[in-house]
Amino acid sequence: MFSRKKYKSQAALEFLTTYAWAFLVILITIGALYYFGIFDFGKFLPQECSFTSQFQCIDFTFIGDEIRLKLLNNIGERIMVTSFDVTNDVVDTLSCVNPALPFDWAVGTEADFVFTGCQGGAFIVTERTEAKINFVYYAVDTSSQPRHSVSGKISAVVNEP
Image (cartoon, rainbow, N blue to C red; front, side, top):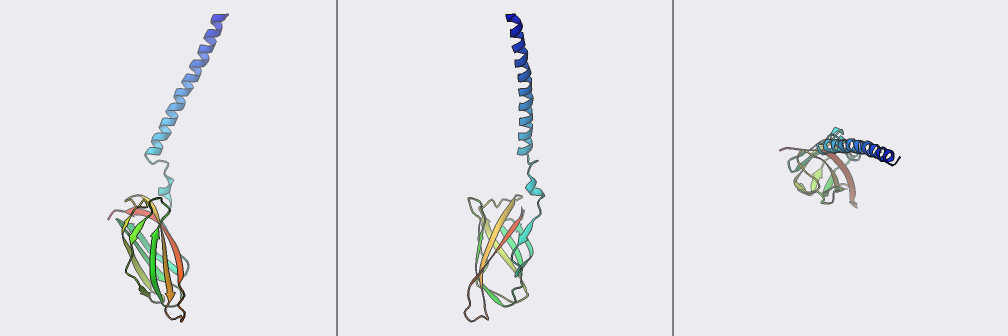
């Protein structure tokens, strides 16, 4: 009887070992697929640019170390842009050299903004990244000229120069 019990436990141990090896192979396979980017669904998301309705995003691109942005002034009056701020939510935040300021922007016209020297913030060629762009402006024809702040977001892949 003693020997029969020994063989029973050996069969159970061999059964569990076989399934442990199979489970280990499955884990290694899933890890390899993840490592090579098969499960990176972010690359299938569309590129987007979103600002308020007063400033319509016409075109945008991340190329090399630049962010290029074309906005339309739908606010209904001539404005003066006084400051820009480009950032994102990454630990090492994105920083760029801002375009020349102050910028006089007529009603209903498109303006091209180019932020150069972008670095940090996961701004890596061929990788998807996000940039939050904030700018401050005032209406030129308003007597008190209160400052207004506008925020927008661009999510795109950084292209090679």
